[in-house]
Length: 341
Image: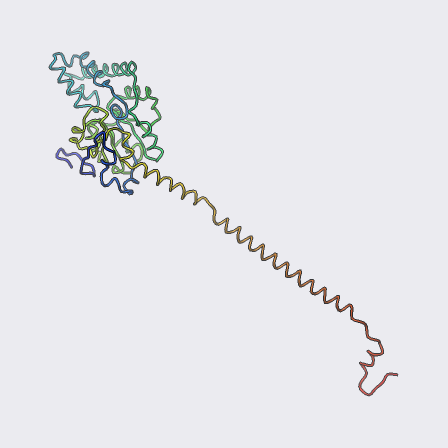
């Protein structure tokens, strides 16, 4: 447990990956164990900045909301609001606005402006996935690993993102802050993902995100591995300081970090064994026994035919012996010293 009272991951040492360094160099020692790889059940991925390219849309929409709701008037207030927005990236936007607003009405007004501004910016500039994100998700699911996409956006904004990318059915589940009791940095989102997908243990769960809030949330949930990516809001120092077990260039590197090649090879071996199990060796043995029985019966029939042929030959031989004269036969039957008349 960390000094802040958070549940820490089973991995003690955080690793940092440079963009020019192979992803394998950041794998924690335990992750090389095939038994650990076999326990992988669930990967929880953040949306904006982790699987979806942000391009500053979140910050721009936030600033529009701050101005519209009057949360920051002076230049100094705007700088503080911008800094606060950056530091709290990944957290529910309504929670951020509540921290800045004087009352709930002001916070809700700011949140409404943010949602409409983000949808407008997304429509104008377009949204695109982080390279390799979609392929990774499909690959994980093909291996039987559940994938859940989470966000600090409201459900309406999350749906805007999913629809723009055609990702409605990409993952097993999508969760917004409103789907859990609390958003990040609390552990509710990862734990809700675990419960709804039916994963058996937090140790088989991997949490991935681009913000300190993502990392804190994953650690608090007790995830077996918590990974930071450098495609979003926070840098490697911030992610490492938050407690990330590993920091990688992007989600595409997660495949090597998790050893998906090894998992796929194991899956192929399982399929081969399943194919062998489907072969009915008992039927093959029964067929062989039937052939042997048939051969024995045929041999027995051949022997019977030979015996019948021998018997017929004996009868034929007996029929060819000449008949003895009747007188001679009678003489043979007479007692010694007597003659027939």
